[in-house]
Image (cartoon, rainbow, N blue to C red; front, top):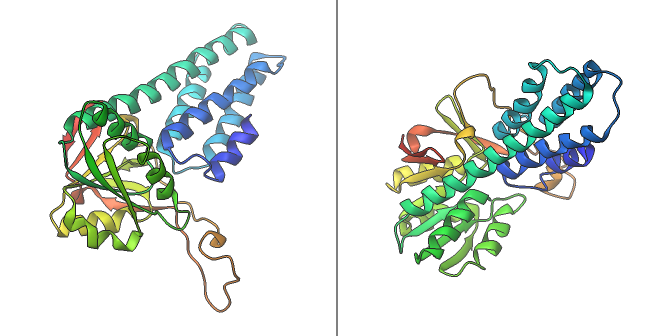
Length: 283
């Protein structure tokens, strides 16, 4: 389970950072089925496997915080037996997962309440919180027009568009990434998820920065949504990920290089607000 989860994270099979955090934390449950001679041996295994899961994607703040939250709590507590340590681990896993899932849901509900009926939105990439917010809002009777960027080179936006197309009350249109400047003039707001906000910088799927910069030029407000656990004050250094060149082009690159960063950095001064499970805050 741990090895499979690491592979899924590295291959970006799951696009929601909240879901990644939950899956990584749940993967630690594999250790509850293994046999250990001593508490120390169990704790070493928990720490080692926690590190493996966190290294699968160092850029995911929610993943880092969730897995670390389990491992460090177990390490800081004295356990008389291996079974006691395992029981504590199971309890911490459930608590961390519940916090991540409730954080996303509460953020989505707060976003749904804030969004005005009938507005036109532009979203980028794939955010389960954005999707849930629009589902909650339409269930309350609101309607929206939504432009979705493709999020190249992996076309993750197509997944967003397909899911939004099933939501009654949302008129969905997919556009190429470079067309955002053309269609932003028709939009009332940009609504995107976030990987994390660290030191006054939003880190999110590559392409977010140019959208936010263009929106600022056109005076279209940008709202970022997600769990408050993704707002990091200190103790976390964002590490970008550079993906395979084959995601950009399949044929060999002869005589030139190919760069494929997974994320970009957007100054929060380009954002109007952030909505989390703790409410809405203007930036």
